[in-house]
Length: 462
Image 1 (cartoon, rainbow, N blue to C red):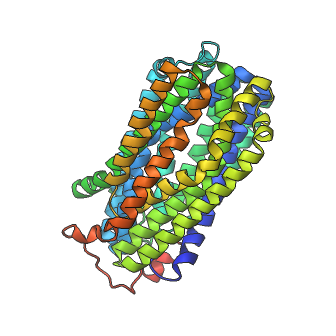
Image 2 (image 1 turned 60 degrees about the horizontal axis):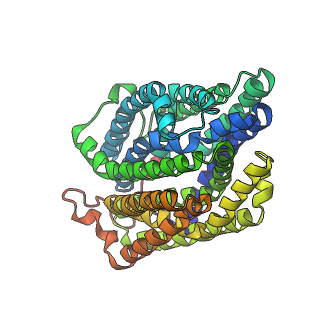
Image 3 (image 1 turned 120 degrees about the horizontal axis):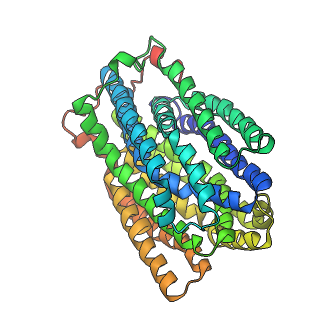
């Protein structure tokens, strides 16, 4: 991504990522559709309660993986094959450990977490069975995100898309078989997801283990390189903390909504699935921005990095708001796809029409955060989101619940905090010297000239 038209490079990277995200969101949504249609409102509420808790459990690991992606992209852009390889193998070693920890923690402590979230007693047994099965395969979830992130950091967004299409189709077929045909129960939807994710991991490994590239993954080389570990943690821990505090705040939102009963839970889960589609372009462009910024700053292309950042931000904001307008307009019809119960429809529509018009602020905050991460400034979005999306959001919700107890005001927590963070991020982007962050790190200066890029043999598959 260090040569050629920057707009074209960003779009060529973004489109496969966006399509892969669409497929992933589709099969997550189909999970809920199948469960809601065949197993009822209680089962839908159990699955619907999963999103925020799963994100909380995996958010730190995903954040550290994002930090590793920044390191891999920077060294790949600078043409340093040895450090690129060391970063990849260190990242895999770290996350093998993280994956095992996630699986054990999830299986052992799921009932406790769900009780803390004030899950409806009618839903609790189903939710426990779903989560335990899901987290039993937690290592596959972690490793898929790591391997996909590695390919993306190398500028390859096509293969993760192909692999996700295959696993998505498998997931849907298994959902129908386990839930609709065998009627095994809500846990089988999680089992289908675990099986499909394991297939994605195998496909990613098959490609990364191919010989002849600077990034070839070798089982014998998987170990933690001390210097690379410190660098990955320096970039990854702030992102991990950022994700964790967002996840924690969202769990508190979910917990407050859970107190309004199973219909509110089912509605919230249905809306989150719909909102996920609006987040697809945001996530796709932020990933493209981070990779583009990292590779180009690693190659010393400062002006090109600024140009790409502006283009990515504009595209992310416009695409997210387009989805928001569509969701606002068709909210009742979209919610009814999951559950047409009047109470569920009322809660879900109210949330959609409170939040959807403000997606441009969500996109703007995430895009600037992506710029910061790509420039090695991961501490900045961590601090902003810790203070605004976590601390302020929690205080707001606690005050609303204590003094008013109106679910509609809980929904407003999101637009309010997105507005505040966007103002802060705009000031930082406009008035800070983020583009020269790597230049001040001793020993991390670019090793290739402004017009140089990776060799042909390293980019033929990117």
